[in-house]
Image 1: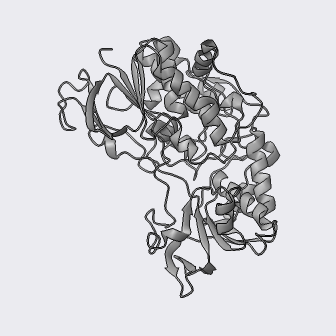
Image 2: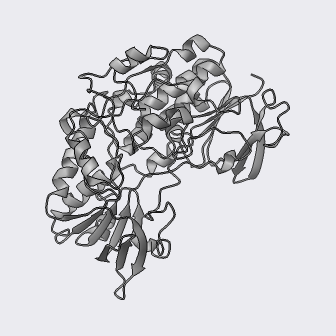
Image 3: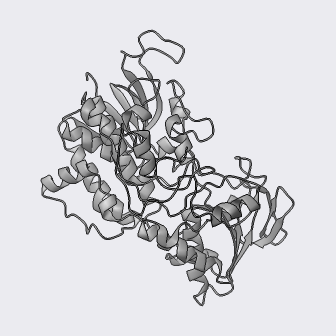
Length: 465
């Protein structure tokens, strides 16, 4: 490869890609828009992960860190916070990679354009042989450099989904942003806790982040300062359904516990559920509080604060001059869509996939990590680590290793999709079913190897496509 591999993002998956490249002696440059490694992780540093350390350290990265003699490995059985993950693993790994021969990690460097050198999107001739042109904005101005391949691990953190049900901000959402928080607040911070304690808080969202918010507000309500805290939980679905996950059946123990804790919070008396609530507008009342109105006319008033945890979406703006093949609904790698779409699937199992599934029509460009899932939730770090191991092996010409994609994913204990968006009876039937779209759940996680027969894949839990 005449030019380095460019890796976009110094988060866990981007750094894992760099670690695999370093092990293979490949030149690489990691561009990170933030001031340090794991900058996005640092924005939710207070949140405890439901994956243990054993699932949060990339195998290639562990080998490099162990060999350095300067890293103290964490307890594999412990569950770190985002801050502990960043400080105890991501930053030490980035520091090590920055010192490797042929490796660079550049902070404060935002990739604003990826294209083919000297050729715009329309030009066919020479696309497969010409290098990529990477345009980067830094404090010193814009730079342009050439790359033999691009691994986009930029994630989705910078683009939270809005409160509005149309996919755009609701009327009045931007105007009242001073009372709206996107993401999980740090309720352990006294200043932040004071913002929500004793207040009427509307929470929009259904996934793990929403569960974390419900748990945090319930704990806050038990304090003297939090007395009187009330929560309106805004759900777009017709019922709570399986919002709390698989509980004891979840093969990630702490993910199951989070769901159980959230269920306890939701039934503690401080939470009022509003189902089929699809926000149309946010209006400031005369007293400064908010009134939120749904498309069907439902309304919740006297709201002091709004917490929006409705997921994220990827940014493809800087990829406008390269050719992409994405699922039209999710914005995910097309081949993954049926297995990860939340309307059809919640099992947690995804068929083994690597460089062949993640490559784009623009040869040498790969979308990995959260970005490969588009708007779909439930991405696990271990999935991304296996993705980039395969991708980097392929870029190194080692197709034997690249095609040997092994994937062990813990199932959620819930095996159905949200399915009938407007039909509560259908959802009730799904929730009561002993099996879902994937058939009977496996008792233990199963190992599936790329290239296995369809029958073998089905026996191992298969996909919900």
